[in-house]
Image 1: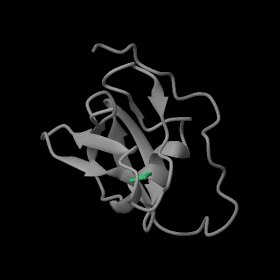
Image 2: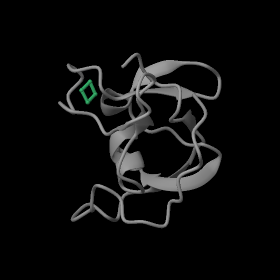
Image 3: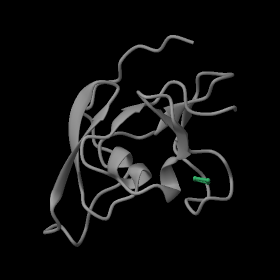
Length: 106
Ligand code: FES
């Protein structure tokens, strides 16, 4: 399913309230360079910039995770290399290249 690019100029789902001094980490989401902080999960880093982490493969609906602890399968995301992983239980790494449109099975 092809998805239109989502502008990242809206507030994210999350707002960082503390630990703002951790080292910045650059990553790429659907080709756009973004920053998170070292120690963020992929889910946290993405949701700081927008309100969802991936599109549902079946309906195209936005998904932002549900349990945020690795149990519900709602946050599958892919890398440009084709790896699939749960965004809520994967730590952000520098230069990660993520794709939000091919992440999961629901
Ligand atoms: S949000 Fe439930 S497994 Fe990631």
